[in-house]
Every structure is written in structure tokens, then in C-alpha cells.
Length: 363
Ligand SMILES: NC(=O)c1ccc[n+]([C@@H]2O[C@H](COP(=O)([O-])OP(=O)(O)OC[C@H]3O[C@@H](n4cnc5c(N)ncnc54)[C@H](O)[C@@H]3O)[C@@H](O)[C@H]2O)c1
Ligand SMILES: O=C(O)C(=O)C[C@@H](O)[C@H](O)[C@H](O)COP(=O)(O)O
Ligand SMILES: [Zn+2]
Image 1 (cartoon, rainbow, N blue to C red):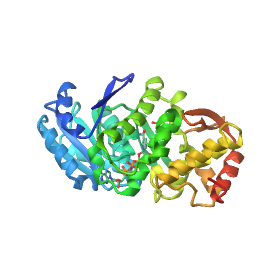
Image 2 (image 1 turned 60 degrees about the horizontal axis):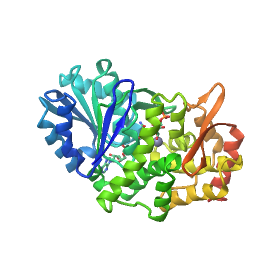
Image 3 (image 1 turned 60 degrees about the vertical axis):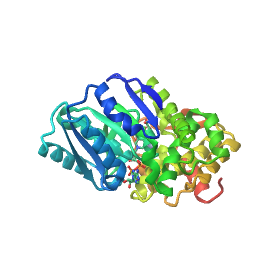
Image 4 (image 1 turned 120 degrees about the vertical axis):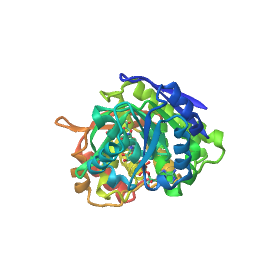
């Protein structure tokens, strides 16, 4: 078992990563002093059908006064205020009170939404993240919770850390190849931000499934360590944490433009390639490293070209992003494999790089 510790102004919390880590949950809830409470297991309707969710519910019953499940339709289109309102009503109907505990069991959509509900219901109740997608190795850590608006992704939210993260890699056994690749985009992103050795490993041996359990736990925990190290130094994104957004300024706009036909990781993969080309064009990143970024994403089954040619529409969506302030656009751009820098970027640089990638001059 790998344990990482996340520092937070609202209280430090542990991240447990292992094949079978779900079995640690009852003991952990006791250690955290959360036994004997009512637990609301919030999930989506796909995860609800899995044996993992059923087993988890049983495990929590061992320590809870009462356990009930609330499920909403799967997908980013449902990471909305409307779904949050449904969940508030569901919690109230079940007599859920202050001090009771939310368990967010699912991918990034469940984690962001259930975390947002936990942050706001009765001004805040404790919650625990139990990720079930590979992508959620990222979303479960760091306390960024929130919902999308029609105008853009994650426009309403909070920094609200969980009491713990329990990442059981066995939960990933039911993911299909597309969801696997989707999650690998953020693993690759973490390698680009801070783990050159991991990046080299992914180039040499693409990770396309669970494979050897211990080796996989090592890979995913290394990606998680990159995130934890950043969050521990800048929990509320006053500066450094912006590096975690590499690929996301273009990525979020493309994801939004697709109407969520593209998964978050798929959109981030496209964003990583476009942003690597912006970095290369301004002499920040070597052409070789830009090509390596595109190649490793492609080898993991991810899209590396924007499927849409309306760059002006993508720019308009980018203008709604939180990183677009009155001072202009702040981007996190890779400057080497394992290093990302915060830069001001002009719209023309995005136009040129986007069109270059779109027209297939890359990788
Ligand atoms: N808060 C953060 O720091 C952060 C970080 C990264 C991404 N995100 C957010 O996370 C979301 C994307 O997360 P995601 O890709 O996990 O999406 P998701 O939660 O929609 O999951 C993807 C699909 O996989 C299904 N699924 C989940 N677990 C499964 C399992 N074990 N077996 C089979 N199917 C399963 C889901 O039902 C869904 O259909 C986006 O909204 C993104 O903005 C947040
Ligand atoms: O945790 C972070 O910080 C991240 O930027 C992680 C991203 O992978 C994630 O997609 C995050 O939700 C982006 O959030 P945003 O609030 O900057 O849109
Ligand atoms: Zn992301």
C-alpha cells in the first residue's frame, strides 16, 4: 500500500493507493472518527451497477449507522447545479445531517459534483473520495470541487478538501479502452509536469491496462505524487498550482465545444499537443520534446489533433476560462519533459499553433 499525505489549511488528509484498498476503508473511517455516522454514497448510474459499488456499500455498513445511495445520470453534462440541487433534496429526504459523511464513489464527475455538494450542503459536511476511473487519480486529490455552467467548465466551485482518498486500482478493472486512455492523459500530464523518468517509462512501455498490479500501483502513485507535491506547496492556486492546468486552457475549450462528446482526458491530450506547439514556437520547448509529447499521447490511444476547424469559436470559449483575467491569458506551458512554466500567451499564438496541429503538420 502506498500512502501519500496532502497538506491543507482545512486539515491534512491521507491518500491510500493499492489493489484492494477498498478493504482499508472501514478501518480508516474509524481512525478518522467517522464511524457511527450516516453515509451517503453518491455515485453515477453506471458505477452504481458495478460490483465494486455494491461491495463498497457493504464495507461501509460495517461502520455506519445508516448507509444510502444516491445516483445521478453519468457524464459531464450532469456535472451541473441542477444535479447538485437534486442531490441536496435527496440528502434532505433521507434526514442527512451536519456531521454525516458523503462518499464520492466514481470518476471525476462524481468526485467534483459530490465534493461540491459536500462543500455546500448545510455549509459543509465531511466527504471521502473513492475514485473509480483512472482519470480520478487526479480529480480525487487537491480539493477542487465544482460544477460546469453552460458557458464553460468548472465555473462554479470551491476548494474543499476530502477527509481521505481511497484509490483501489481494482475498481479500474471494468473500464473500457477509451476510458483507460482518457485517464492516461492526466497520468502523462503529471509526468510532463514533474516526472521525467515516468515519462520515459511510458514512452518505452505504454500502460494500456492494469497489467501487473504492483507495477501499475507504482505508475499511478508516481503521477499522484506529482500532484500532491504541487498541492502541498500551493493549495489554492495562487501561483504554482497553475502548472496542473497544462493542456487545459485549450483542452477545456475543445471539450466544451464538443458538447462533452470528447472526454476530459481526450480534450486535455489535444490541448497538451497544441500548448506544446505554442511553447515550441516561442522557443521555450525543443521540437524534439514537443514531438515526444504528441507521440506518447498517441501511443496511449489518445487524439492528438483538434477535430474542429473553428478556431475562433474555441478562442471564444477559452475567453471564459478562469485563467483568462483582465491582464490576458495565463497558460502553463511545458519547457522540458518534467518542467512547466507559467506564461502570458497572445491569442494569435493559440490560433497559429491550433491551425498547425489541426492541419496535421504535427506531430
Ligand atoms: N477536481 C479536479 O482536480 C479534477 C481533475 C481532473 C479532472 N476533473 C474533472 O473530472 C471529470 C472527468 O472525470 P472522468 O474522466 O473520470 O469522467 P466520469 O466521471 O464521467 O467517468 C467516465 C465514465 O466512466 C464511467 N465509470 C466510472 N467508473 C467506472 C468503472 N469503474 N467501470 C466502468 N465505468 C466507469 C462513468 O460512469 C462515466 O460514464 C471532468 O469533469 C473534469 O473536469 C477534475
Ligand atoms: O487540480 C488542479 O489544480 C488541476 O488543474 C487538475 C486538472 O486536471 C483538472 O481538470 C481541474 O479540474 C481543472 O480545474 P480548473 O478549476 O482549473 O478548471
Ligand atoms: Zn484535468
